[in-house]
Image 1 (cartoon, rainbow, N blue to C red):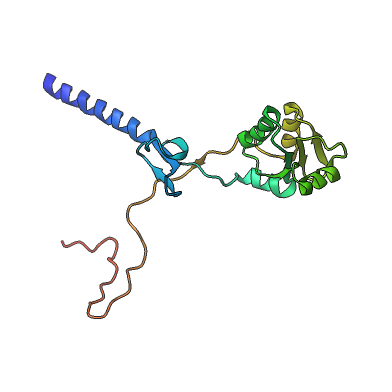
Image 2: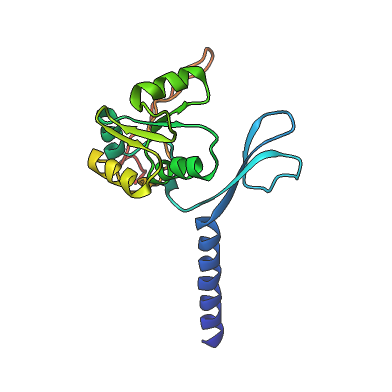
Length: 196
């Protein structure tokens, strides 16, 4: 009896560890020496570029598509960020939009065309500037004001986590076309076709 309990406890511990390992899979995305983008579950060598790591949980898909609420808000109130390489201020401004999962367009005001577009929106020509739709304009980075503008436009506070149902292993796809010299076999009938 004690041996049976030991095996049972060992089996449960093994399953728990295996489930934990599967639930937190590490994925690496990098550019190899030939310039190809590679996705792998094995750590790359040290000579790769643009290394990114991500932990994937069970039944989750990280997706760049915006949520429905974010897409609806973007349709009614498109967001444009007028910015340039101004250091922490501009990085914080862009980071705020990324944290919330807000789809936005960037206008580089270092370019003459970008400077002209900025002058049409904000006469002072100071960046960063955020426009939400046609009416809401914020000159200079102020996190509380930007958050309030995004809230008023209906953007979610955080990007939505996408959940996906487990994929079935079988396929209900039609059988492949019959080739010459072979005999057509129909798809199996579901239920009731077993011998008695």
